[in-house]
Image (cartoon, rainbow, N blue to C red; front, side, top):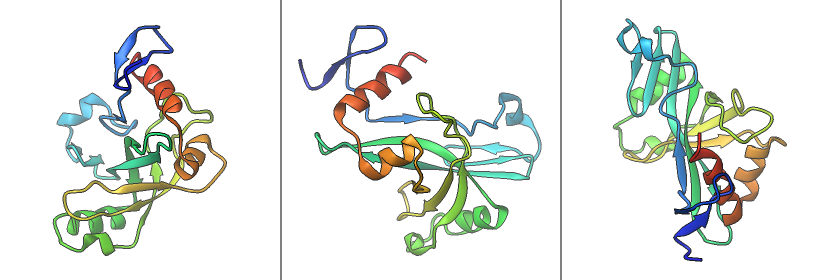
Length: 167
């Protein structure tokens, strides 16, 4: 089989890929009607709900050992108001990667993981301007945290793709 293709475990067809990333468009707490509400904002990197809940998008990275690739989940993490304010203050500032990590809660349920990924503890590491933050999961026994620490193989990337491509 071509390495740019994989046999889908859900539909049995051959797809191109597998994709090396999946993204959540918003935190799970965001509702479409909030787009017009006062105190609410959703852009590609930041989200505010009712001026009270604050979120930042970052990457959960999983090394893929047998290909040398990195699989990423582009997900949202809730931050405290002070940490969100600080992250926004240094958003375009060179050297922001020297910021200490911000504690947050993973704010997306990623399909295929039991128990849920919603509200896993994280540390959000700011990277140089133009690069999305790195989301480090608390080193627990949760399957996603284990995959982040231990890495995965292409066969697991194919499993993830089969699940997410048919949602």
